[in-house]
Image 1 (cartoon, rainbow, N blue to C red):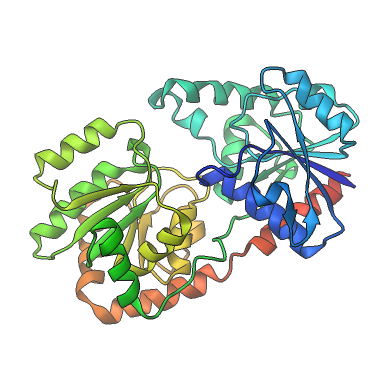
Image 2: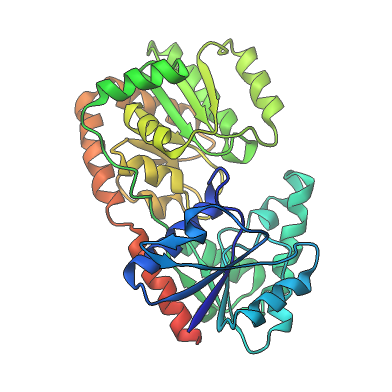
Length: 371
């Protein structure tokens, strides 16, 4: 069985879907070195995954992005049996219509383009119609959560039996570090950030409910707690309003934007922080809270979409409109060491339930079933 995956340049700043692709391919090959996996992408890359994974050569077939038929030709030339498109947020869908002898798998991580299309930047608006266009073409649709499965059934009328729920996992590099002193010194030296601090990681945009986070942090300071708020991630849509809110509340010296940080530094942030707050309005899965939990960080998040599935009873899941509840929860964790330690233990136990080995194994089973 020859597996083909539509990939893109993985040696850029890895986030989201890039990490999904990287981790499942790596875990699949680690589980069985005889597996034949081809990555079909735009151009040659120096990334190790295009060369070897545990001494196994990964085939790569570049195609011309400007020519959709080029992708279909790559599938034929590489003799692919099962084609996996690891995200619906992609315009090249020709294999779903042309390659009749190839089984097709589509991963739908969320329905953000459909549910939030009117509030998103212009380029997002293409993805919702694309998904509606190809929804009946895959032999199986993989999704990260039961919540997204429900969304696919309710909004796109996709039969439940055609959808397979396979949760994601934190990377192996995200782990608990007992001695915090060294990493805190390193973060202060490199980023000028000292403890204590509240941490958020993800796109800094309105859909992530950053305005509520800022306002609840403002209330936390008014309750007498000394802290900083660190927002890791690139500035997205609505960032102007976010920055104006920070300025109007007089928080310019308290809110820090490190931007994108590499995984080795993100590990340090997760371990050095006092609490992770993720009040997002909608998530297809919600990987940052799980990464934080894998590092033993207490988590406060929303009770919406897939987030309760990920957090379970290990953290606080709150109404994303309740600013006071978020402020009170941060206050409890930052002022109660026993509660903080209890939540650390719960976070570690919960995160251990999710592994990329499980994700890759379940994904490979889907390939076998459709083949």
